[in-house]
Image (cartoon, rainbow, N blue to C red):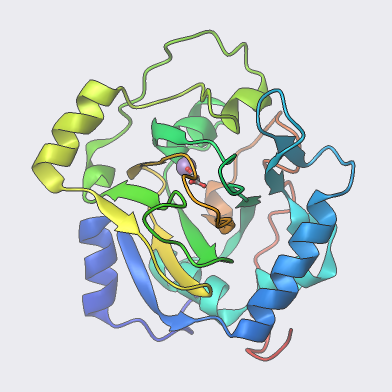
Length: 266
Ligand code: SIN
Ligand code: MN
């Protein structure tokens, strides 16, 4: 779908220039509470989509909930998310990936510098970076609970990744703190000096878009506050990989163009 969130050309240009865009919309407290409760419930289940911090039973993330949970299926069709993605990509889209990174109090572990498109291109065969991440805060995000750190404008640079270790194509190395594809610190540090680093802090319900090739990371959760961050990646239908092999909860196979749910549909 395209054209329903009413982005101005100035806003679209800002996204194209900077590689990220803070939505003026904030999801309502009731909706955020309902989604958070459902994610807590699902992530407590023994299911393959749940990932734990290394060597623990601390939940790091849950994936693909839009495939098996009705509330999440409806969430990804809301104008605040799907409308924004459709406006930014300007062509029909589907959900490529859905995840919630829970970053638990004191135990949630960092994400090194990386570009999401490294994984989608090298592992899944996504041909172009015609996708967009919509990030939704399920908790308040502040300086100490591990906000996303973004280096603006780096999406213009193409892929900068390095494979410092043999991940053996195991998808667990795409969702753990030992990421298979990273942007080396020496490169990220130089880019941070040049462009600065933004910390995506803000209230629960805040949402923003960021580009698949944007360099980003986050630190450990150093606080007593959880930092649950919901990330929905929308891909252009025409850009769907032809023969993905990773599990469906990391790479959705249904590429039917999404249509908007009514704003109050949840
Ligand atoms: C994070 O949850 O802090 C990182 C998420 C990502 O890199 O996609
Ligand atoms: Mn990422």
